[in-house]
Image (cartoon, rainbow, N blue to C red):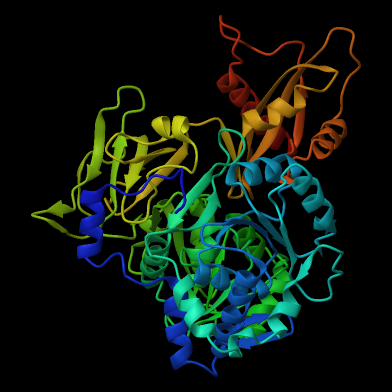
Length: 578
């Protein structure tokens, strides 16, 4: 069994099971049952590759057996760093079938992040696509594996990839029909994990440095995909486009590809975020549902050639990653053929979203309410901890709806959550868990929120933590500062968010220079971050040099003052540009 993780409180776990929120089977079993019904129906498209439910069922069985034969075993951790390619689905299902735990990493992550993630997870394997998006991941694997003697399994997935010595070709495994050998079905039956086991390690937004590992149980992770899919009208005719990175919780399971398959739908893997390419796929594959971040939605609204494409199949766009401005949300309803659903989610668990019957002000201004009747929440005064508002949906032993609450509307505070798919602790992070979770099991999200005046949704107002949310990619300011402070010319550094009409926030770096040092440029800083192995989305995008940075009487940089300063500077620049 996996160690260093926090299970659900027994009294709540009992309720979740008795009420049927947790089932006795997992997503991979649900998929296999759907395959029995829809064996010849197309389920997965990626480029020129097309697969039926039957293809995926047999292929994932085959791959699971090969993984066992290689020596992978229950609770082993494997880094998965893949683009949106069909092989991801085969690998995800195969790992589930034998209880091997994928650690889902983003394609942008580099040595700085992966080395620490792999070490903390004690990963024994690493699955990549070889060369992708102009980057050689083999070099990264070698760097990481050099520090980790237990990393024995190196696998490459994807078409037309060079397979270096010491690496395993996933496509060759998929061609070897191991499932046809005697005893194969029994081998898989014995390897199937318990639904209460941890089935995946997601990554936190990295708001306190290196991303923490988020252990999600099989049954809870299946449940959230089911609930959020119901809210969005998923059915056997759904065709979902996965164009944001599939390692994201929104694209994988909220409702994600899991949600589409649970209801017998189809998934189209998109590797290009270009608006024109998305339009082409909508027209070609008759896409009905697309999870997007605000930057993608804005790009679609502003795409001048949109009318050249038949987008009439498109029913739902799910905004996630960061909040969408009300003026943009209103444009979606008027200018695109689809309805907007505003979603707020965290890899740690809780998902909220608006629903199709909500009035416009709720859809445009809020992130909706929690998707499960068993989700519980509180909004707390960030200074005193007093309860401003809280869910009131558990009465006489039953959960009753998602809109019941007591307390004040339109008063902001820190929002905290617990429920049947929200974790009780990060993996192998005992000290941090004492701060991130309350004694009664609520997760401290670090988000400022208030209940909307309608009572039908939350309004997110920012972050309490020192972090930047760049188009849905959240990262720690401290992590970036710690790298930049090693620069020989820099005395002090402070990273703060600056406003951006498309991404919501970008990173602005304030620095003071060492005495006698030459100046630095933004290009110098970017190169330094690149050499430090920092993911590109974390690099500063504006540099402000000051003689000194404002500090408290104990030497702490006054970031609030710097944030106000850059907001004022940019407002003045925008005013002068008009």
